[in-house]
Image (cartoon, rainbow, N blue to C red; front, top):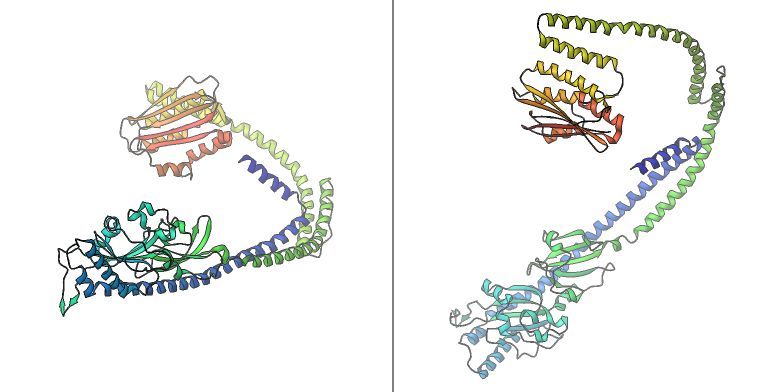
Length: 615
């Protein structure tokens, strides 16, 4: 902090000692540069806001279109599943007990495959379509539903123990969508864990066969004894990505899909499939069906547009790097910078010409002032054409005339000072008369055996002598304590029976010097304010001790106390009384940061005021 003050002082002195011409040139430069720089900043901010606003509209439109296209595809698939589970042949095929022989299972599998082919054979982008029960996965006899990989059957035992089967069974016939997951892990196939991620990572749709088909004009219900198969459609993650793919309008932009719970469905980086989205946007950004937001991705700002699917609820996100949107703005900044430099050079030239014209009269005035400083008060400066300098010259000439008059008046003033000194000596007799009068009253009180009145008069006389005769700011501690004891004695009589004052000064060294009357305002506050609601039993304790190179004086009472807000107002905002403000200012002037004034208080308990000064 001290170093900062020194730097500030050096800069201030440098400005004071600078020539007027240099100051004028600097002022012109600032007058030109500040508006120019401000204008450049505003232009940059406005341009970036316009670009981002236009980009937001485009990004939102693109991501909505992508979501609509994917929803059309998913809705078509959902319609196919309804047609399938309503098929009478499918109901007839599974309306039986668990097959007992492999030959029967094989015939059922072939029939199930034919039925599945009837509804899903033309869809080449499925990873697998199967009807899964606890004893068999039907549909494995198909020639394959994908062009990307060999058909891999879902194991029935692993499936019925998975969370996917549990959720499908809970909804009892509704179609559920599951975001991308590793099917080898979910279905308990660790031996296949070494497969390429693009084959292992799938997202699925599942539905329990729970619809009553119409057969021969009659609605048929599934018997309770028959296990209902689950239609499970697995999609390769690339199935979704092909609808997201496009030539990016902005370099570095990309699409990805994430569930409302933050599980990634599709992403340019295959290693993140099925993981929780580390960006965390799903927690606080996707608050509406669609929208845009400027967010952080790591340390980089990105603009995102998002739209939620009406079918799955998953959110399609379009991520565009902010720096790519504003990559052409530096050109605008360079143009503004060039204009600013040209204006600065122009302002320096204009300032030089104007300052030369303005400083000529000033040089004449400086020469005249030097003569005046040498004692030639008869110097006169001729009038100047400019109004301002004409006024200055006139005032300067009047000043010299006035100085001559003051020299004459100085002699008269010296005589008046001598007369005032004599008057002050005479005024010293007035306190002496007051002390004699108080002494006479004291003897009269003693003659009438009014000892309390006599004691109060003695205390008052002691206080007056200490206040009037001692004009120093620092006094001996014992003298100041004697004065304070006289004060508390008088106030104790004034508030008889309300409070008692005790002193505990721990053997402070003789000759200890303290600020004059530094405890009196604090004691007065304790008597007047803290004891205002006390009827009896009040106690004021005045203590003093030395610790190291510091002296600690405390004034504590058991009065009404104060709130923390009141203490803050007194210490920070100087909301205390005149006496307390006076003590703070005196301590600051005498000791600076070496002195402290502390207040501790609790309503209904009392107040402790501590004064800390250097020893």
